[in-house]
Amino acid sequence: MITDKNTLILEAREKYKVNQFDHSLMNSSKTKLGPSFQFNDLWTGASWSPASPISQEYKTKFLELGKSYENLSWTALDIPKIQLDDINKFKEIWNREKIEIKRLLPSEDEPWTEEEHPLGENSSYKRIEFCGLHITCNATLDFNIHDLYVNGRLKIPQYSNEVGFRQGRTAQGTFTKKLYKDRFFSNLIVQIMDTFPIKVLNNIMILEPINDILPHREQTWAWQCPTEFRISLHDENETPTIYLSHIQTGQTSYINLPKETNSFCWSNGTHLYGIDYLGKESYHIVVNAIWDIKKYKILLERSVEKYGIFLEKN
Image (cartoon, rainbow, N blue to C red; front, side):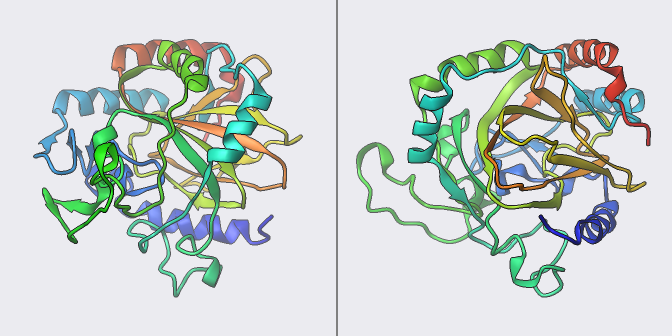
């Protein structure tokens, strides 16, 4: 485990304090999360299609929710445990199909340049923190080449020798990506779609930490209410490993889930997060979506009422 975590948290906090709530600077499509229908405060169906502004009504409602939940660091979700049908079958598929999630191009959003990074050559441009894959993705046609476009034009001409279904779909962008669709994951996806407040699904990704995850925040949403929804699918660690740090105050706490649920959420606008790697297997699901405001409010109210003890006052 990294020994200078507090230094890294402080450095990241100072970086994220600048334009902390500015959505125009956030583009999750150029991160490990992969294709999304929102970027730089815009809606988009594909990176080569014209984008349109996110409606003011949608933004206003989440700003209002931010006032209600600005003191909420994280909360467990009042959702039954999301479970695998067969953990051994999952591990068999996982060990065969997982890929290393690694950066192919220098970071635009990392808090440090490679030269000034406290870990030097261990900067996230060179280090590998996760193995993973996507198990479903709405932006399938855009999956491999979504982050090669700027304003509807390819930055660099891309060529592919593939034929048939894979023709033109093998070019890589900022991160390595893999979409693996298997019937084994169908029930898992159904559970998520039935219980999470999803309006439009971007994608569902499974990640396995294989290194300490340096403190950072996602390039998704910057509101003060919870926007990052996760599932601890299977964790062999005996102590909590995922921590959150408030960007303004520095208050840091670990996510310690109750026994009856493995789903949780936090505010990406107000917090950064990291993960301690203790050498044991753990698998996390990232649900990246455009949230349904009505379903979202019902779930958050119900969850906070049930798990209020997991509130962190900042």
